[in-house]
Image (cartoon, rainbow, N blue to C red; front, side):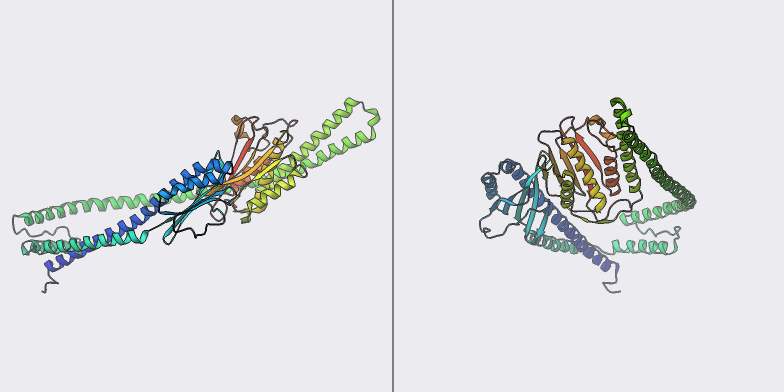
Length: 497
C-alpha cells in the first residue's frame, strides 16, 4: 500500500484539502460579504450626506437662491471621494452644482432621476428627493468614487498569506500522526462502513488498548448500542407519522374541496347581486321618467290653475326625481364595474390627470390655481384610472369652489413597492371622525343643498383602485381642505381581473 492509499496519507490529504477548502470558502464568503457591506456603507454615507444637503438646501429652493445652495455644496470639499454634487428643482432642472478638483469637465445629468443609487464601474451615483411638509422641493445628486478593486486586492493578499500559513501548519500537525492513532481509527472505520452498508447495529469495534483510542472505541460501541435502540423507536415513530400524514392529506383534500365550494358559492352570490343591482336600477328608470314627464305636463297644461306654492312643490318633485335618476345612473356604473375585465397598459398619469382637469373646469380655470407635479407612469387600465382622476378632481373642484382663492394640487411620491398619488384642495374639508364613511356607496358628509352629489364617486374610486391592487385613504380637517391618496403597485400587472 502506497503512502497515498494509506489511512495516514489519506488523512494528510483530507486535513490539507479541508483546511484549504475551508479557508477558501471563508475567504470568498467574507469577500462577498464585504462587497455587499462596502456598497451598503457607501450608499448609507452618500444618503446621509444627501439628507444633510437636502435639509440645508430646502430653504434655498423655496426662495430660489442658488448661491446659498452652492455654498452648501462647497462643504463637500472635506469629502474628497465625492467628485460631483448638484441640487435640482422639483421640476428636475439643475439648480446648483459642485465638482471636485480634477473633475471640472465632468457632465451633470440634465434632469433629476427617481430616488435610488447606481454603481457604474469605479463610481457610484445617488439621487435623493428633498421633501418638506409632504412636498417635494427638489433632488440631491451625488457622484462618488467606488474603489472596489483596491479593496478586493487587499483581501486577496490577506487571504493568500493566511492560506499559505494555515497549510504549512496543517502539514506539520499531520506528520505527528502515526499508527497508534490511525490503526484504531481504521478499525472503527471498517465497522462503521459495515454498519452503513448492512445497517447492522449489532457490530462492535475491537478495543485494543486502554488509552484515548480505546476510550474512543468503547464510546463508539456504546453509540452503536444507543443507535440500535433509537432506530427501533424511530421506525415505530415513522410508521405512526406516515399514518398521520395520510390523515392530514385526506383532511387537506376535504378542506380544499370545501374552500372551492364556498368560493364558487361566493362568486355566484356576487354575480346574482350585481345582476340584481343592474336589473333594479334599470327597472327604476321607467317610473322616474314617468314622474318627470307628468310634472312637465302638469306645469305646461295647468299652470294657470296652480298657485305659487303648488308650482314650488311640483318643482321639488321634479328635482328629487332628477336626483333619483342620477343615483340610478351611478348605481348602474357601480354595478358594471364589477363585470368589466381590466386591460392593463402603460399609462402616462400626468397627461391623464391634466386632461381630466381641463375637461372638468370648462371655463373656470381662471378662478382655480391648479398645481401638478411629476407623476410617474403606472401599469393600469387607462379608462378606469381616468375615472379615478375625474372623480377625485371633480370633488376637489366642487368642495374648493366656494373659496376666494381655490387651489387644487396633484402630485406623487415613489415608495419602495408602490407609487402614491394624491389630490389636495383647500376647500370645505370634512370631520376626520367620519372618514371611514367616505368610500361607501351613497355615503355623504355634506348636505346636498350645500354640495350636490350622489355619494357614489368615491365608492367607484375605492373599487377601481382596490381591483388594481392599491389602497385609498383621505386626510382632512373641517374647513381646511382635504387630501385624497391612492396607490398603484410598481411591479408589472395589476390586481384582480
